[in-house]
Amino acid sequence: MATVTYIRETRQHLIAMRAVMDYCMRKDKTWDAQSRQYLISGVNCDGRNSILEFEATKAAHGKMDGINFYQYVQSFSPAEPVTPAQAHKIALEFAARAWPGAEVLVTTHCDARHVHSHFIINSVRFETGRKLRQDPNTLKFLRQVSDEICQAHGLRVLPKYEGGGKKMSAREYRAARKGESWKFRLMYDIGQAMQRSANKEDFILLMKRKGYEVKWTAERKEITFTCPNGKKCRGSRLHHERYLKGSFEHEFRIRAERYGRYLAGSPDTNQRSGGGDPAADSLRRDRLRHSGAMAGRGSEDAPSRRGVSADAVPSDRQAGDPAGLSGWQTAQ
Figure 1 (cartoon, rainbow, N blue to C red):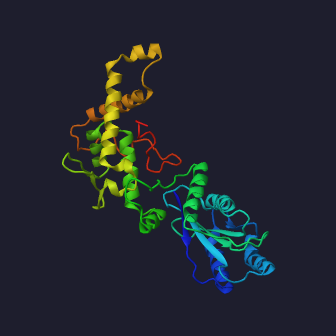
Figure 2 (tube, one colour):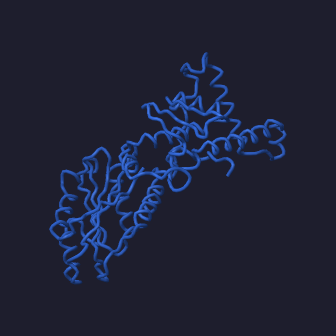
Figure 3 (cartoon, rainbow, N blue to C red):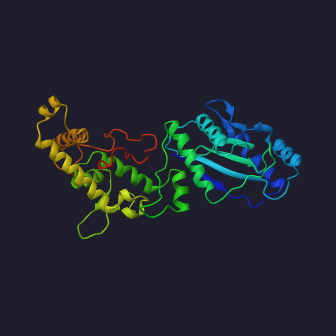
């Protein structure tokens, strides 16, 4: 998954701008041993000569004071199978769409555990001389552009966190950017368990096999998850309404109704008549596979080669579906 972060630069004089750009172009950070090249480029400028070009643009339009540059970073999780060269290509596409008509230095750093790209944007447009302005909605727009490009490249994106549950803090966002957020691991495991659960009992069992304890009772307003690292989390703190207790119960009611309708009819008759419910059909196949796997186990808690495990579940990490939630909401 890729995230976009704004780096606030309080020192805005030209010397500070040169220092930041020099840092971003450091050879020990931009050298990619795999592709055997320095990942330094530019959009509307020559990356290696971008400092001179930025200053020439400012001088030509008489705008060398005030805000001189902006800096953003696009980072990939260490778990994302992206090479530095691919990350650099994505960064160039992102810069071209994010800041049209602006000079942008694009460098990709390969020396950290997570591959990330730096963007230094000239505040003065080279053609018009007009200054680039940022507002509170800029970062939201940039993250959307980044997600669209990553999805086009078959990469995952962070789940949207507006509406429903508690909003994501900046601290959590930075942790997710580095691939260190246990909440995003929890959301992903919930998504995989939901893909193979026909009811509440199936879901709790699969989560238990992944190392989670699930407290789901009629008396409690929310579901509480205890993670393998010992941290506890309620569904309302997972940034989306799909993790609320009512959403889970509603989903399983829909699955039970469709499963019951399917069993009430004859599969052979449905097949001959061309009828049937495709969603129920798929759910029944998953249910039968799950039941068959459970039948070969001496105890529900005992591990078995025939049992359903996290490793045995097919990957649901489709583009734009980081938590493995595709097909979760069968009611929609």
